[in-house]
Length: 300
Image (tube, rainbow, N blue to C red; front, top):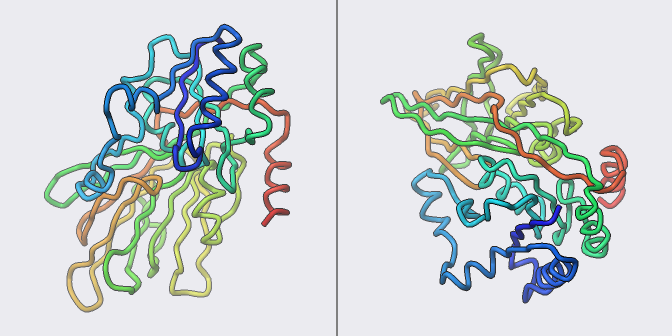
């Protein structure tokens, strides 16, 4: 690899010190390196108004994919897992592999720590890496008026309550067949990659990231017997919002990777399935997922 694009979470790389080190290192070795933060400064851009987009339920763009040069062979993402997930969503149409450099606290996706950056760059320049295509979810919010809102998720799609702190009834269907009804705060539908995120915190299982599976996990269900359900990656999940206990209408949100929230109400439903698109994640180290998991569990 000789052509790199760098996306940095400037809140985690104070003064862009690590970003500058990477830029200097790559250019000193004869590589082309384009830095998104430098582009923003040169073009006078300050990014998108994410709060405005969240309110409208539209796609939030952390990175403008049009800024990425056509000859870019690799995207280096400096931040944490959240930064890498957002970058993967924004650039998925380009199918450029990504490598995460962890500047946060907990990194499952961003495998390279700050101290190992130089070694990782050497391996990328020598083409000493493997490519892991990670499954993504495609979600469609279908409103009873006929409107449909589509989006993608690398980690998870969450349907959860809005407003007052009370449980809501959710009806779950798999391939059109009724599965179960949950009275809960919400429902998490995650990929194997997302199984170590919110789903894990809600009591869901950890799934190998290269598997093709979908995990359905209720959030704080009002029952003693509710458990996560692991489905095939080829299944299609439908979540219908039930009517309220005091009124005929409940309100909730369908949230994609914790970034884009689309409001829904009783009568609406969310369809979720495996996307034809995938996020290509570069792997440098020979450390297995089980070893990473073991180390993270020991740390916490």
